[in-house]
Image 1: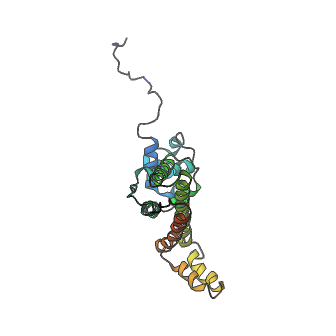
Image 2: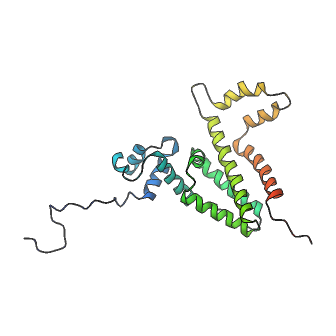
Image 3: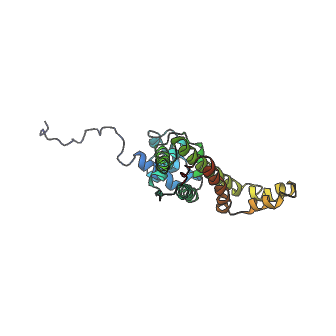
Length: 226
């Protein structure tokens, strides 16, 4: 007979359960470490030191891994604080998002493809929109302003990434130089050439300036007349 103690005997089976290290946070961090271009269940399992079949107990596939990675990135990101001016705050916010896209290749593409209920993204949107309301926007205008500039950053960044992605026939940028620019009407060719050759951040800055002017004209709070 046993001694009645609480310890498990040699024949005692360990109760099944999730390994302590295999939390959503740990899986998300491993997915970030792998990176979006190489993201797969097998690669994340390798980083975690588990069998890929084990990882399938916690995630259903690559899309869920991408969602956990995006959540980890946005949860850990530094966020600008409002300084009393809506324009500088919104501009700082969109550049913070752009910097995340720069730091994590493929993030912009995943950002646009994810289901719209990522907890970290919802919390980010709530925070930015609430700050804009504090700065004088109505709730609809705050959400619309946030949506405009972040969507534009996402679309622009993912477009530049696709343009510079190498394929068998060369990059899309090279194809535009040789196939697209010469076919554009002469009066527009200098501007199109500027776009094709531009540093992505600089071209986006020009687009952002136009977008913020539109926000100022249509959505921003009006100063009361003296």
